[in-house]
Length: 141
Image (cartoon, rainbow, N blue to C red; front, side, top):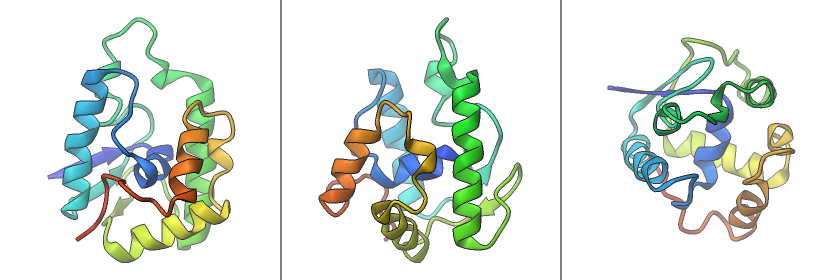
């Protein structure tokens, strides 16, 4: 199987510690974190992805908002520059230990966090990074 992710969720997965918008969202994300931790391949998508799924039924789903799309664009650009590859629809990535370590190191340094600026979770993610990514749920074996 493949986990479908939008670009800014490549950043979110680095600091996910089990908090989310709703209980259904969090339970879904925990399940996806297990899949990513086992090395399941990521396929990049534009727009709502597997993590967004529990929010899409609501009338106030923010997944289609221009601000979220801009966040995806900024994340794709920064991560693509770091990895020296184009991050776009259909790009496939394996979340192995080497990749996660490289992304987390650069996240902690702030070099790939431009997309996080206006995110409501940015402060939590910053604390997770400051604590050395302790208790994150996406951790390659």
